[in-house]
Image (cartoon, rainbow, N blue to C red):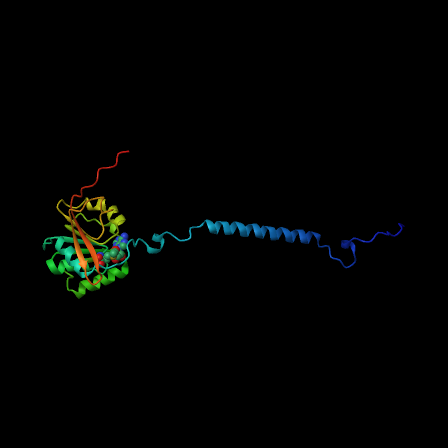
Length: 226
Ligand SMILES: C[S@@+](CC[C@H](N)C(=O)[O-])C[C@H]1O[C@@H](n2cnc3c(N)ncnc32)[C@H](O)[C@@H]1O
């Protein structure tokens, strides 16, 4: 029989002491993995764009609904030199004021197009209110998908990047058709010089607005040489 050891037991060997070594190591590993995972997740979240592209939210609604004041509507319709035989397309018609005024003042047919169902409902109600159902049709559609080849006149209040993107559609219009825009050019105002520009002063707002007219075919700038 061996003589009893005179050495003190180590901490792990003391009676009643649990063998925690592997548990401690296991716990430490879990904590480390959790920290690394948290850091990786945070880095990935950081890498995401802080906001979604606008189109995701607005579903193709590319210009906000801002109405054209009555005096400008009247000027646009006047500048278009409408006759009852003309067909007017109102691109981004909002509540329909441009195309309805054209129909009321000149008896011409018109199509109002808007992508926003709320605007379409308003425009349809306004068509009814003004009794021009036989002249004006309102469509819920994206302007970039509209065939404007049958339009004699386009009325619009859209942003320059939109009007520039519409050029291929405008070039399908018959020669001698008119494009009328509130404030904005077809692209940048210098991109295609308007054939005429008129100013409208809104006295109450102390604002001057512009009404531009282009006659088709548009005089596109020469392609840039490389
Ligand atoms: C500045 S508002 C002009 C409203 C009206 N034409 C006026 O002058 O009072 C622009 C309109 O374009 C519509 N719109 C924006 N993006 C469009 C798109 N891709 N296709 C059709 N309509 C669009 C909006 O819903 C809005 O009613």
